[in-house]
Length: 272
Image (tube, rainbow, N blue to C red; front, side, top):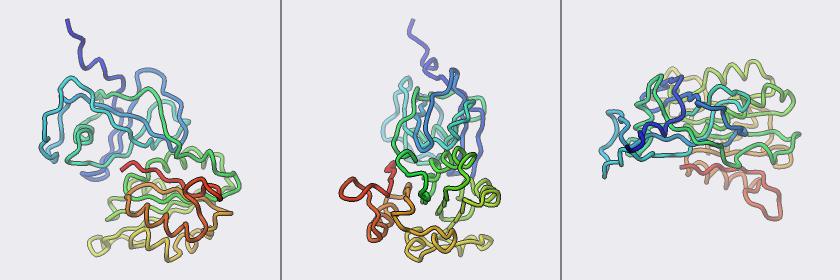
């Protein structure tokens, strides 16, 4: 008798929050003890090829093997001190193999969760006296949520700045939580921005592409944190064009993305 393919599932969906039809936050509770991880690392989710897909999904070029797990790595958004579940912030890729299946998950559904976390996109190498500027577009925000949820509990002196860009205000996941944190924590500044304000007239905040805001000095103006590699380090996650352009701007200011003559002061998560 062949083994049941569903036996490969080892976790349960215990929370699902739809930000909009293309963005969702899901919480997954493992059957066993949750692996240890550092804020900024990623975990692996998986579903069988037989798992249902949302209606918005594009037709698959070739049908997935029904009994085989489709696995992908996603940045963890939950705090590393949260041991009951692990949280992920996902965007729907209609032509993708896995996200159309993940978006079909409902509370109580089963899923595969990888046995460990990986990645070096963490605060480990940042000196404790330096500010941290976290720049993201879209779901590139996820690792920063983990960092903030973990670090702001105890870090009262280090300055944290989040600059997050999306098309519309309703695409800004975690906005309410980040606004609350900014009110409660004097060492944290949250700067949301949208690129299509003409279609979202109720949004009151910065507008324009992230790279333009960095160039205009918005980070310094809003937070008082200088874009100086001696005093701050920058993390970049999200749209590859944004990452490339902001990296180039920072390098002109003396920041370094790779080991060379200068220590690394730009940290990049290339997950697209």
